[in-house]
Image (cartoon, rainbow, N blue to C red; front, side, top):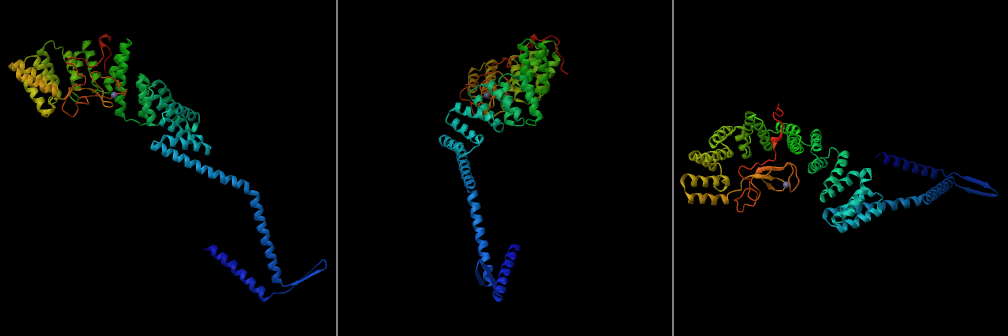
Length: 469
Ligand SMILES: [Zn+2]
């Protein structure tokens, strides 16, 4: 608006000037070197304006000639950069689409057009990896690692490569460096923790666990569970190394952090019973059986109660299962004890209670086998026993320790899965082939009755040991 008023004012001024000059043309005479020019004032003004206009045009042209080399170069570079970024974008799209050849072509083009290797190196490395050329990819990742702005990306690439080829020690070295650069990255922290547990660096893993909690990457419950499992493992290692005091220390601490962690409860109860602290051992197991009944606790409890014969085992089992009387495991534990004591009526009652807790197709194989035993022993009903054994062969497999990451099923709990090397992934349950369906083939391992599921033998610990607080 202001600009329009300004132009209008100029135009009005010019029109006014032209009118004034037309109305008053005036005369001008010039004499120079014997020449005389007589003309109007308006004509002289017109000539002066024309000369000034020409001078301005010539000046602009001269400026253009002087600046053009730089401007041409700048325009050429801008065009080149634009083409470079286009190639880089196409390369990234090709990586996302899985087209290795196109990704490599575009990465090379972008590399030639752009003077920014960090940007093109990542696409080049990914393209090489897609073509299966890990060596070339590794060279790009190493080059990226040398530049501060791409150091983390390079480390990440090399770390993934090391994990892929199973070189856990090299991977851990790279993970430590990456962790120093990005301590708040969940990806790095998780990898570092996993690699520390895979390489048996239990103490380092414990420190990382504290760091993870401090950085709020894991919550308090998760940190406590991880620490308990690590301490249990450290206890096993200390025991192997002959350091019984440290083994007991770690075991007690593990139990304090995770009172429902069955391997630690069973081992620690065995230890207390072994050094004469029977009631302490019994109390510990009773406390665990309430919220988390587990068949691996029955035998340590019998030891804790010093049950010498079948009747004493019945009494012990009755006391133990009082903390959770309606649980399937309680009925199974009682049925086992009554069967061993030849108390058929009680055994049948608890087996029937166990059957009532499940659907007809999900009756546990253990229960079917005990029913067969009962029919044969109490009634000498061999046909009935055979029928129950048939049902046992089709029943869901007895629970074992199952890795919830890869489905590996084993009768022995371990801190790291022997198959996929994941940390603390074993949960007690039916093996995956059987879970949620009728068991057709019993291919998984079976926990033998009376078999100790854990590997602790604390009999070599010092008598008296260390008191739990
Ligand atoms: Zn696994």
